[in-house]
Amino acid sequence: MKHVLNNPSDWVEKYGDYLYAFAFYRVKDDILAQDLVQDALMGALKSKDKFKGTSSEKTWLTGIIKHKIIDAIRKKYRETAFEDKALDFRTRENAFNDKGMWKTGPRKWASNPEELLNQKDFLTVVNKCFGELPDRPGRALAMKELDGETTKTICKVLNVSSTNAWVILHRARALMRKCIEAKWLGEKEKT
Figure (cartoon, rainbow, N blue to C red):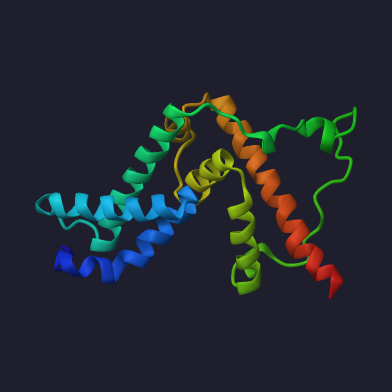
């Protein structure tokens, strides 16, 4: 099926909120997300003649903003040094004993993870915890889990080695787990 572009003047109304949310979850900056949406729409307008119709208009615009986000993240990490004090901990010392066993392992979740995704309250907690992640781990986790990017792409965008990317992703997941346990499982135990 060949897709066609609608009138570009309708793009903001049809896709503006979606593109903003897409950008905001990845850059965690209101102004930057707005700028990225504007840049993506301007880029789409300039290249509308190159639209081949192999994807939907929304998918095409999402691809454009995805590239704008990656460019913005690359630029940021080229310009600033990595100082992520929230990750300045020793996972092994904090979570594991001398034999490599959990001091206190992950808590048991009473619900099926697939069922949790359908619960609005749980998704609110996940979004809140995602928003509380430090900058670099949050971006890495968004690229990996929300965008399905490869480790190679994450390394290139964040300008880190594959080992460092793995550590950043591991720590981001650990922070998410800890936050969800505190905000979701902790609330469930109170009720």
